[in-house]
Amino acid sequence: MTKKKSKRRTQALFASLEKITAPAGAADADGDEDGGLTGRPFCDAEDQPLDLESLADQPICMAPDTSRSLRMKKFRTQLFHQWLAANFAPCRALDIGGGKGLLAYLLIRSGWQAAVVDPVSQALPEKYKDIRSNSRVKIAPGETVPRIDAEFAVEMARDYDLLLGMHAHGSNAKIIDAAALYGCGFVIFPCCVIDEPFFPRLGVHWIEALAGYAVFKGLAVFPFRINFKGQNIGLCHIGERAQWLAKK
Image (tube, rainbow, N blue to C red; front, side):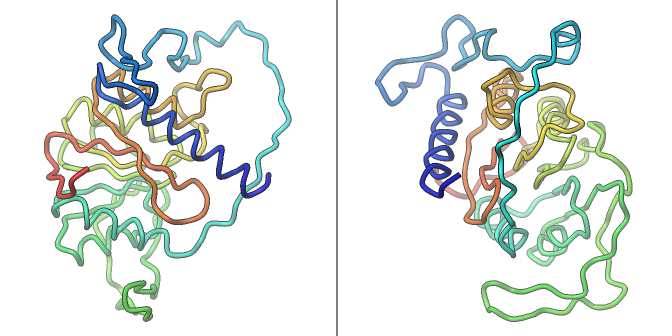
């Protein structure tokens, strides 16, 4: 896929997400109001993601994989940290699928209460690059961050204000469920549909399906982008507990 074609597809996806997440009754780019009988934009039954049971008796149609895996640009964790610190007041955050815990470590250094939940126990990296000062920062040996060595469960969100998921495989729908149940906010960068409880309809992007699922759950969400390569479109729900600093 050429860079121009990839850019056009990304722009079209982002525009679609803005429509899906627009407040009920808001005018779209053509000046039309969407919402219909549901009071929510683009929530026709034909647009809703399907669960596994509804797909059980349908024939499987194989399609060639034409995607190309783009190499992630370095420092995406640092960029995500900067975005969070600029837009949210320090709060209790849970980094889901947080790996070595660098994001939680950076948030804690910024005055947040942060923890990691990941089924694979990992130590913090020995060092990282501070992209503001362009310098290497060493992490003291033995330093740790609070972590739960398990897969994320909805009940874990009870004590947190903000749920974070940077390509949190198999946890995106549960993050949305947790936000709807406990009133916490979330910031997610959905990647693949592996181990998720439902699949998007044919022709519907996974991020669009999740945005529609969040709206279906009654959550106000909006898309945003951070400047790193790969899947860099995020979905944000501020929630009842977190304090939003930036002006949209």
